[in-house]
Image 1: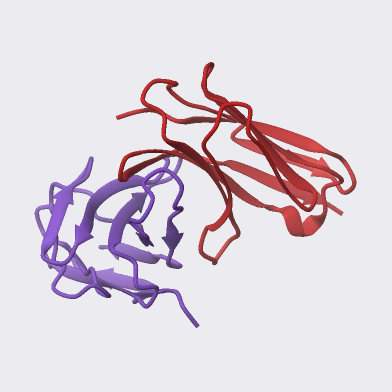
Image 2 (image 1 turned 45 degrees about the vertical axis):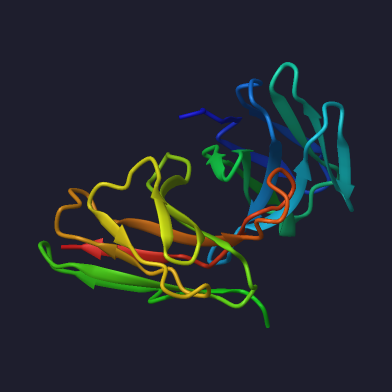
Length: 110
Length: 115
């Protein structure tokens, strides 16, 4: 099993604060790194798919970077809002299989 | 609307009974997956299927069985041989077109409680 690790496990921030969390993964045999946002009682929703070292992707206030050589990706949320509260999952895929981290649970306090 | 439908959402069963979780997708995806989540753990792969009438074991296949008779459907049976069946089960699908780029789409999950 190719372990994907996420930190921190959980995070509480005040509305308006910016925050970031980490996904680390084995750098060998890399295909792609995926970020998902998972709200309670809903399906995980794809945020980003990143394939190239140095990739940087952005969707509104959320952005992500990728370093395949050292095996990590950062997810940033600028100016957190209560609706950003969710679990953020990362996954590495090697061929047809996906390996998921345990997620970072974000709570944004109004 | 296109998507993945899992049913039932909540299921209670007595120990020793087999139970089947349904997963249907209308996204025309080739690949389908079943994952299990336990507290404090990431999603773990039970089985996956890349094409109709073919499927492969994932990391924790023992005590589970699947079938893929139709492209749209990938039901999971939790058998009495599964030692700790109480968990949250997620079905997913993916377009096989590009191995590295295509993301996985998920259903909303099924909670199984065995008493």
